[in-house]
Amino acid sequence: MLVSVIITVFNIEKYVEAALLSALQQSYKEVEIIVVDDCSTDGSYEIIKKYMDQIRYIRTFANSGVLLATLEGIKQASGDVISFLDGDDLWAENKLELVVDAFKKHPQAFFLSHDYQFINSADTVIYKEDHSQDILKKGLIEQREDQVSEDMRRSVLGYYGNVWLGSAYCFRSHVIDKGALSAWIERLPDPRMTYQDHTIASYIFLHHPNGKLLYIPLPLFSYRIHGTNYSGTAASLSQMINVILKGLNTAQATHSLVIKYSKDASLKSRQEQKVKYFNYLLCLFKRKYIAALLLFATLCLKFWTWKEIGKELVRFGTIVLLGPSRYISIKNRLI
Image (cartoon, rainbow, N blue to C red; front, top):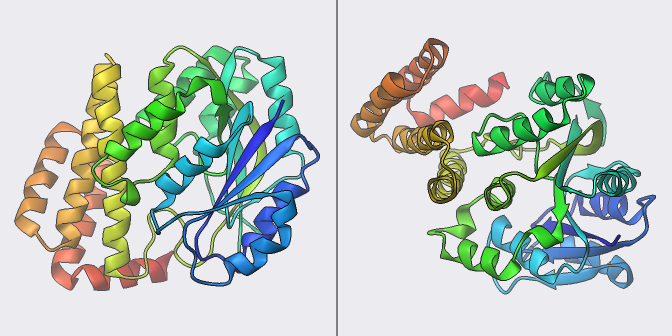
């Protein structure tokens, strides 16, 4: 079983070699490693070129964003399984061995993810309280494999956060029509500013609504936290607006899929909530306070719990009083 490993890279010269080595040194050896360099302008290429005899290197014609860079890797992949590694993360040495073993034991399964851990810029494991995947682990302990599949599917499509994608997920290549996936992504309003993993996983799930999904409750990859790369963080107002825009574009993309392919009213409602939420944040951080207030009211009436309302009241009030830049500065000091 050939595994294609797609590593996307953009200006991460400090970490890319460690990521490459974690893929090259896998205990499972039937792999092809495809490095997609999204027009890095730092020293990333100088590091990557040392391994040219062991990888396939693709450089995009222009900086196109992680979704289109990932898509280029998928189009070039020839493996039975397609897996992903961000260029600043690390895989456990036996990750692919366990992934292939799981797919062989469950030939009807087409998608797999697993647990993870956090590391810092020095490769030291750091503790961050995270109970996001407990529901999946509980299902495995209770030997409810069908429920695990359903929990994974609803978590991704409903944005509940119980499944980590990123450098964890992989799928059998036969479940996607590469031409159809490519055409759909390229028709998105702004694919350059759209996240890759949630978009692609949602596309697969909605085209295979009843397929079996697998979860391995082991931390088989290390998510590196450095600077403001952690999801939802930003060092400046312009960065925060970009983060929100990517979230909004991703939610709009997955919402369009759910509307077209799903009959589940609760998923449609959940997707609608995410689109409105990101629109609310965009208005708030762009100081369009009246529009933000109207969306705030809609979210309160239709979607949010009292706890969520309280949290957003604090954010809304702080930004109106101090301004979005000051709010970001205070938030980053408290993280």
